[in-house]
Amino acid sequence: MKFGIIKERKNPPDRRVVFSPEELVRLKQKHPEAEIKVESSDIRIFSDEQYSDFGIEVSNDMNDCDVLFGVKEVPIDILIPNKKYFFFSHTIKKQPHNKKLLQVILEKNIDFYDHETIVDTEFNRLIGFGRYAGIVGSYNAFRAFGIKFGLFTISKAETLSGKEELVTKLKRLVLPPIKIVLTGSGKVGNGAKEILDAIKIKEVSVENFLSKKYSEPVFVQIDVLDYNKRKDGHLLDKNNFYTNPTEYSSNFERFTKVSDIFIAGHFYANDAPCILTREMLQANDCKIKVVADISCDVNGPIACTIKASTIAEPLFGYLPSENKEVDVFHPAAIVVMSVDNLPCELPKDASEGFGEMFMKHVIPAFFNGDNDGILKRAKMTENGKLTDRFQYLQDFVDRK
View 1 (cartoon, rainbow, N blue to C red):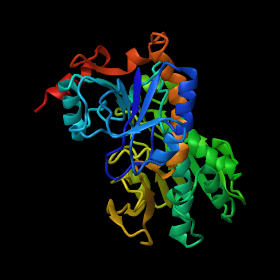
View 2: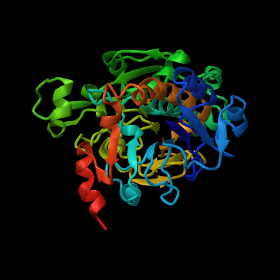
View 3: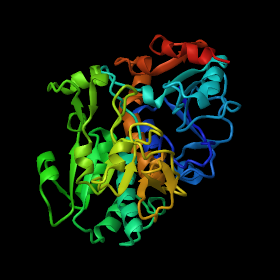
View 4: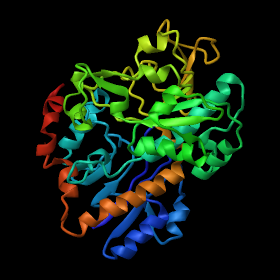
């Protein structure tokens, strides 16, 4: 079997890669029968020379590869028919802008596996860049706060070497006694918490966060039942929320009255209630000054996320009274950071972490007959058709 690491061609350029040179060496050591080729790239965080120095073939021709690994969407004219592909397609939620991509994947008889669809037997995701989105998003929250109030200026994350340098920069700051609320306890939320823990921000309970004043910065990490409540007032468990989200409404307002910074690292399902509404942001007692929306669902559960910002221009001001973008320094503006490709700011760390996950969870399936069903569950297309798990996309691909 011949694996190919393809060049990223999406704009803006993405420097990440599925496997670092060192990880490919480990792959060869564990599976000597595997052949590996890397497509030449002048933007990748690891240079062609770094791969070739480890004895890995670098080429411009990937036609002889059986399985091709990428990060972002592959341009449809570059897709090679009758191959197996892995990349983020952004199609599983029927995203209109990528409909043609999925249609062409089917037309070209490609066996396609989306990184998002790689799950365990409980359908928990195994692969992703969420941790690094959380790390960068948390860093950017502090950067936004410093800029808004003229307290300090720190470098953009993309100019730094990795997580450790981000932490070093933040440790030098002298912060006022702010309160930070963090939603989410998955890879994204816990990635954000890594930064808060690394710079020794004190974690407190929900009760104390809401009721006490502190002389130092503090944070609270909250889960869905902390910021949602049953409309009928009954107390039930988290599974009930996931099963019946329409029976709940947001209870996040109690956090808006005491929080200075909101770091949004939650997963949001379509039927779940909005978390931070326009009414909450317009309230006279809303204290939130910075929203770092790592989840970045535009016009979704966070009312001030009216657009995705960019690595080049990560911050914008949001005016609650008029629901519109304004200058960051507008006196009534909340600063919003809603970059939707945060891991790109830490391409080396993100690539190394992603490769380790891929080596652990996916690569063995190619050599053990897919004993755990990893590949079977992840496969979206086969023989020019959608697989059973993804039949719900049929009406999507049938649209003209």
